[in-house]
Image (spheres, rainbow, N blue to C red):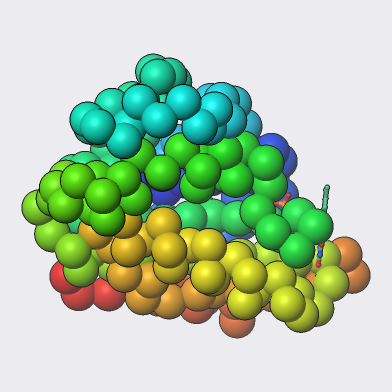
Length: 182
Ligand SMILES: Cc1cc2nc3c(=O)[nH]c(=O)nc-3n(C[C@H](O)[C@H](O)[C@H](O)COP(=O)(O)O)c2cc1C
């Protein structure tokens, strides 16, 4: 099973990292895991150049590796801290760059992805209650999933991280989320 983890946190030992570690600990030993740290990639923003309107391409190559892994993933994990009711800017850049897949599916009617129902897990944390943010981010991720052949299967949400570390019950949920049968 190919697992692609998109880490949208800049903090190597932060709350998102804790959720990712817990998730990984629940994966089968033979899972093939690729983790891409979006703050290392620093994706360029979509320039609305329309190159992807007429063919499966992008004017930038910085997400080619992500694109390759996305196509062969059996399971996708978005690991995201809430920033201003939304996702951090590198993750927003990736979501905007998924315009490429929107154009393929909705405009050119091309299937870039062999399957349409691959599972996606959202690992989310917020400093406060996450009121509104969870809805907003789930909508963003569900839309991205639709154009890339995934379905949002589960959200594991750690709230109030400004006051407390991610608690053990939430970490256990992240670990359990990795045990889904595909
Ligand atoms: C720039 C910035 C914006 C943030 N905006 C929000 C917010 O709108 N709502 C919220 O509940 N927490 C917000 N937070 C708090 C983070 O979501 C929270 O600390 C999260 O657990 C951080 O995850 P990390 O440790 O992986 O970086 C913000 C943090 C930063 C640095």
